[in-house]
Length: 398
Image (tube, rainbow, N blue to C red):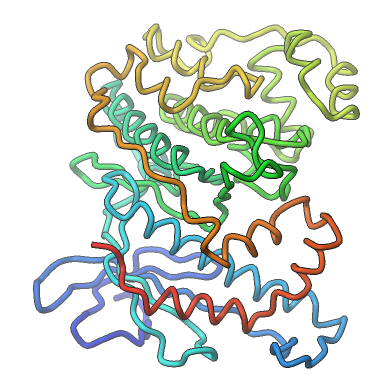
C-alpha cells in the first residue's frame, strides 16, 4: 500500500490497497484469507468532541453544541446507512454488507469496520477517464440504476445523494449504488410524513450534491418525494453523454438558472404548483427561457434515449416519471423484466427506536414542534452509540 494505514480488524483479513477516503471513512481492499475472496473494508471514525450530556443528567455547555452536533451527525449517518444497506442486502444493484466487525468497546469506540463487496471503480472515475461509453453501456448502466431506485423507493426510502461517485462499477459493467448516509425514510402509515403516498415533510436543505439537486429542493418546496432521486438519475444520464456535469451551478441561484436555461421556463401550471410563495415570485421575476434541444446539447440523435431523459428531467416533480415507469420505457426494453425487478417491504418504522429519532432529527430543517425539538435536544451521543453498537453486533443478513 502507498502509505501506512492501520486497521484494527481480525487476522483473517489482509489489507491490499487504499480504495478511497472521505470526511468520515476510508476504504481499503482486502483478502479474506480463509476463502481467498476479495472484499472492501470500510473504516468509519467518529470525530472527537467535548463531553456532552452522558444520559445521566450532566449538562452540556452551550459552546460545545457545535462539536456535539458534528459527532451526532456522524453517528446518525452511520446507523442510517447500515440499517438501510442491511435491508437491501440481497439486491444486485445495491452494495452489500458481508460482515459487521464487532467494536472493541461497547460505548467508547472511536471507529467501526464494515466488510463490503469490492467494486473496481465508480462512475465519476469512468467519466473523467478516456474510456468510451457507448449507447449500449449507457443503456445498461441506466437500467441498473433504475432497478435499484425501484427497490429503494418501494421500501419508502429516498437516497437523496445519487451522483456518479456513489455509483460503483466493475469491469463486467455490473453496477451498484452506495452511500446511504443522507438517505431519508418515511412511514407510509404516518400522515405527518407522507403526502400522496410518496412525499415527505419539509426536510433538511442539505440533500444531494448541488449539481444533482432537483429544482424543488432549491425552491424550498414544503414537501418533496422520491422524484428527487429520479431528477438526479436524469442528471447522471445526461452526464454519461456529455462527459461532464450538465448543471455545474456555482450556487443555488446559478444552479436554478442553468436548469431553466436548458429546460425552459416552467408552464403556468407548473409555476402554480410551487407551494412556496417567494419561490413562485422569484420564478415569475425571471426572463423567459426557451427550451433547448437535448440532441444538440448532448450530441446524440437517439430518440428513445432523449425521450427517457426528457421524462426523467421534468421540472414538476408530480409529472416526473417514476423508477418503475422508467423501467418500462422502450429505451430499456432489452433488459426490462418485471419479474426480475423486485420491490422491498418498508423498513420497520414502528418497532425501531432509531427511525423515530432519525425522523425527528431530520424533519423541519431543525425547526419542528416543541415535542420534536425536545426529542432532538435529548438525543445524546451516548444513546446513539448504544444504538450503533447494537447494530454492529447484529449479524449482517445472508
